[in-house]
Image (cartoon, rainbow over all chains, first blue to last red; front, side, top):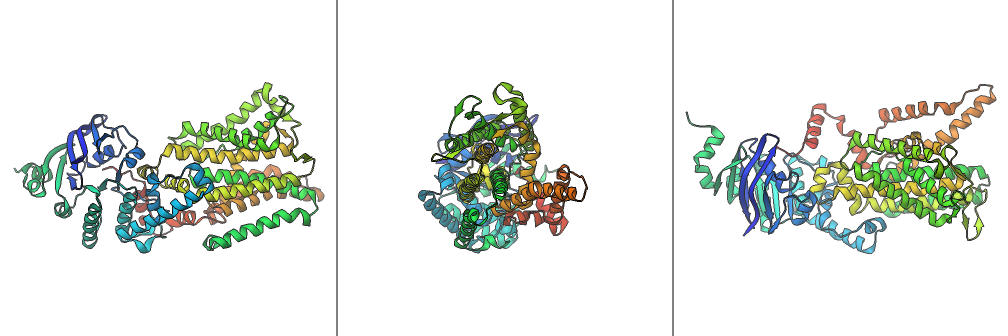
Amino acid sequence: MALLHLHDVSKAFGGLKAVSDLSFTVDEGAIVAMIGPNGAGKSTVFNVITGIYTPSRGSVEFDGRRIDGLKTHQITSCGIARTFQNIRLFAFMSAIDNVMTGEHCRMHAKIWDSLLHTPGQHKEEAQVRERARQLLDFVGLRDEQENYARNLPYGSQRKLEIARALASEPKLLLLDEPAAGMNPREKEELIDLIRRTRDRGVTIFLIEHDMGLVMNISERITVLDHGEKISEGTPAQVRADERVIEAYLGKPA
Amino acid sequence: MRKLAALPKSVQIGIWLIVAGLLVILPVLDHNGSHFNLLADAGVYVLLALGLNIVVGFAGLLDLGYAAFFAIGSYTYAMLASPQFNLHIPFWPMLFIASGVAATAGLLLGAPTLRLRGDYLAIVTLGFGEIVPQTFLNLNKYTGGPNGISSLDTPSFFGHSFGFSAIPYYYVILALIGVGLWLAYNLKDSRLGRAWMAIREDELAAKHMGINATTTKLAAFAFGASYSGMAGCVFASKLNLVSPDSFQFSVSVLVLAMLVLGGMGNIPGVIVGSLVLYTVNFIFLPQANNIAASVNLHVDFTNYRFFIYGIILVSIMLFKPEGLIPSRQRRAELRAGHGDPALAAQEQAQFTKVGAG
């Protein structure tokens, strides 16, 4: 069943068409990837999905509901979480506070609960803290709880971003170049983490340049070039597609 | 003092209670009324600083027009509890009314500035801080213009008028600071407080956490303003008169300087900062005049007020940019770039770049 469905989405910045007439679906429970050369419009697609940009044309449907035009925080509440290409953690908040912030949209505390620390607030804070601990445990950062996000090693920051994203209990997790800058061992851990995340019932949609990783874990791949979809299919199909090879390596002379 | 935050919560609460207990019995030990006059005035500034700390320290919204809310709180009391309109609402409900009116003004200022950040926000709030006293100055018919409003009602407590003694005001402001502290600590450690911090750190990422930046920022403006509304109410009733010159830009700067000096975002730091600057401004400088006069040197040191702030602020920025008693966060932030400059620049770029590509 399709969880995410883009219908003919276009996004133009002035004269520049970053994405044109893009349609594709992400099935529930899948791990899918989007690849393409630099500047192909991949991050723009993510930004359209998460409501940073509204599409110039077309629509985005998530879980049976149109989400284009909603605000970013509303889309998060609908069940889409993401990580960023350039890590955007709350640098000077502890790891656990980062994850607890991720739970914001699932919390019920009203302003007066925050203000007066009502019994309900105490209970919820304790639950949220406990869940954040479990998530840190899940990504392998159990011992880093009280450290500032900024002071964590690079690979751990990526993991913390995933934990923070999972804290909002997403149905769909968007990972923007999760393996960028990772060494082979960290990549292996990441692959394992992505699989375990999917096994929790979270659909994974990632942008990645590391072909080894993409081919290894994705069930379906969409290829973008100059904002257009040029290929789509299983890793084997995409690998064999001449248009993909052309986009990456250029036309044979 | 630096280790205060590292102490267990029960010990911290114990320290607060001991300090509060001492302050409560102080009038029994000290019979000099003028001391309490000064302490009550200092308390007004502590309350202002606590409120501004919510806006600037917690949520990271630089507000240079904070005195406007102080003015609004004061004038609210002056208009509703004086012969001006022959309205005489008692002091106690007025505390809540003044803070509610100021909070509403906070929302009104907040709404148009939501998209602004940093310098731009600072400029708009600066403008607001100028507009409000100007408005009170020019609405002669309602506000008494440059003369302001005088002979405000003196508060009373179960039929006992506060009279001319400063001690009742001292207790009122002490109680308000107590409640203000409790609420500020609660806010800091809550869903809303985390949302403020997240917005301060990275607004875009915060939105992706499902944080509604609009309401979260408005809440910061409203809470911050409500503190100064109460402060204004006490200030006006104690002084027995309001006039537009009490709320000039220098007041906004003074309160902000208190935060910077003490350690923005850290509540004990904010209190120490406000007491230190209050002492310099209202006790030390006038005192210096008297001393100078006694040796036949006629200098008005209060004219050098800004010069002295300048020296204090520049020294703080040079030697202890995080303030006297900083929060853990702020110290880390301001000490972050002191390592390898290339690395720091790279890190800086990493955290400021927008997630596009």
